[in-house]
Image (cartoon, rainbow, N blue to C red; front, side):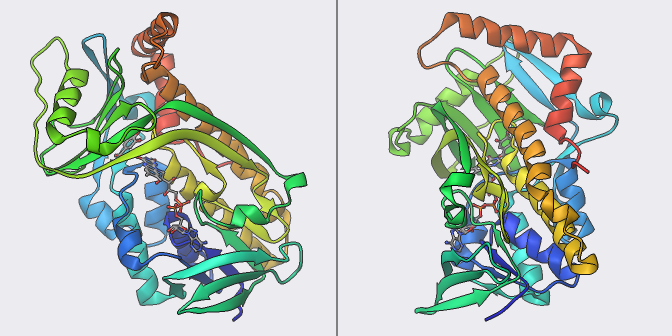
Length: 392
Ligand code: FAD
Ligand code: DHB
C-alpha cells in the first residue's frame, strides 16, 4: 500500500491530523491497533482550552461540542477551608475553557472520517517504522491476520506513550527528560449532577482532590492516592467520604453522591522526548510527551502539535518548501515545555507530599495565597490554563 502521510494511532492526535490533512487535500491513512469500540470509550481528559475548541470548529468537528460542551468562565481553588474563584475572561481578556469529554471528541472525529475519508483501519497494529531517513519510509503493520506494509512520504507517530514510533529514533540523537511524581490519581465517573458550576481544585493535608464533570448529570472526580494503589481498596463509600473531607470548607457546602460507573488509577509523570522529528518521521501528542493531569494539558498539547504538523505538511505539499517542517520539532517543543512547566507547578502546588514535609506545605500555601491576592499572579495562571498561543 502507498499513501502520502501514514498516521500511526487513532487517538485525538491521529484522528485530528487526518481530518486536517484531508481538508488540505493531502492523502493519508490512519492505522489504529484497537477496536472502534475501545477507542471511543477510553475514559481520559475532559477540559478543552479555547484554542482546542477553535481548532475543532475550524475543521467542522464541533457540531456536538458546540451543542453539548459546557463553557466555563473560571475555576475554583480551595485551601485552608476557603474557596476562591478565578475569573478567566476578566483575567485573560475574554478567554474561556470548555468541558467536553475526550471520548466524545474521538467519536465525532471517527464518525467524520468514516463518512468522508481518509481511510481509517481499526485493529491494524503498527509493528515497526523502517527507513525513516529515506524519501520513502515504511510502516510495517498487522491487519486481518497478516503483515502488510504502508509506504509513505511522511510518517506521523501519533501512537501515544506506549506506541512504537518513538523507538525508531536513533538513541544517539534522542534524549528523554522525565520526572515521576510520588503519587497517583484515582479517577471516578458518577451518575450524579455536579455539586459545582466550575471545576474545583482542592489542596489540603489529606491530599489533593478535583471536582470536574462530563455533563449536567455526570460528575468526574479525582483523588490523590499513593503510587501502587489498587482501586479495589477503594469501595464507593470510602471514595465519597474522602472526597467530602477534602472538599470541606468553612461554609455550607455538600458534595452530592451517586452511583460510581468507572474507577481507575493513573500514575503521574512528566516525560519529554527530543527531538520530535527524525528524517521523515514526526511525533505528535503523547507519543512525544506526557504531562501529569493537573491543569489538563495532555489532550490540548496533542491538538496543538497536530495543528502545527498539519500546517507544516500542507506547506511542503503546496509549495515544496521545507521551512516549516524543518522547524516543527523546535516550535512544538517550545509550547510543550511551557505546558510541562505549568503542569509541574500546578501538581507541586496542590498535592500533599507523602513524607508530610511541613516546609513544602507552607510554600504551597504561600503560592496559593499569592495567586488569590495578586491579580498579576492569577492572570499568569489563567493565561496558562486557558492555553498559550501557538508559536509562529
Ligand atoms: P492517545 O490518546 O494515547 O492515542 C494513541 C493511539 O494510538 C491509541 O488509540 C492507541 O490505541 C494507538 N496505538 C498505540 N500503539 C499503536 C500501534 N503500535 N499501532 C497502531 N496504533 C497504536 N489529559 C488531560 O488533559 N486530562 C486528564 O484528565 C487526562 N487523563 C488521562 C488518563 C489516562 C489513563 C491517560 C492514559 C491519559 C490521560 N490524559 C489526560 C492525557 C490525554 O488523554 C492524552 O494526552 C491524549 O489522549 C493524547 O492523545 P494522543 O492521540 O496523543 O494519544
Ligand atoms: C479534568 C482533568 C484534569 O486533569 C483537569 O485538570 C481538569 C479536568 C477532567 O477530566 O475533566
